[in-house]
Length: 139
Image 1: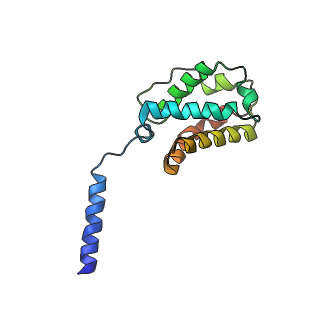
Image 2: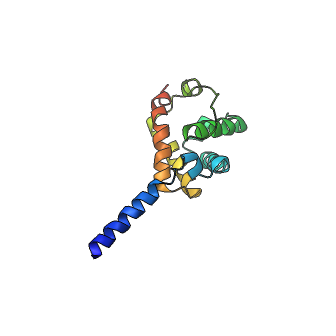
Image 3: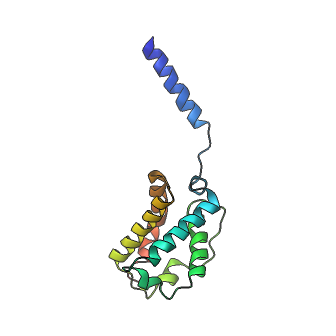
């Protein structure tokens, strides 16, 4: 009888969970406000990092911020359309090393940690960004 009740309980829990719509990554990081906080944390991480700051030192920070917000929003199923330059156009001639690319990813992870974004959500965000890697390194 106990096994039957446990099985019934588990089935009820599973059915109940499947009735709720899954939240997009955009919703899971608190929408536009969450993206803006994350990007601001990321920019602060870059600004305080001697290893990669030289890639950004002549950048228009406001332009970078808006572009990254828009791009990230589109990548995580938000209501945004990214209309900026391609990753190839942005990064051509920068000769970004694999080591520095990986370090920037670490800075983004630090910013996500700072914003208390859960690890499974962080992994999904990074996974959505991963296909862009080859468009950025050593071009």
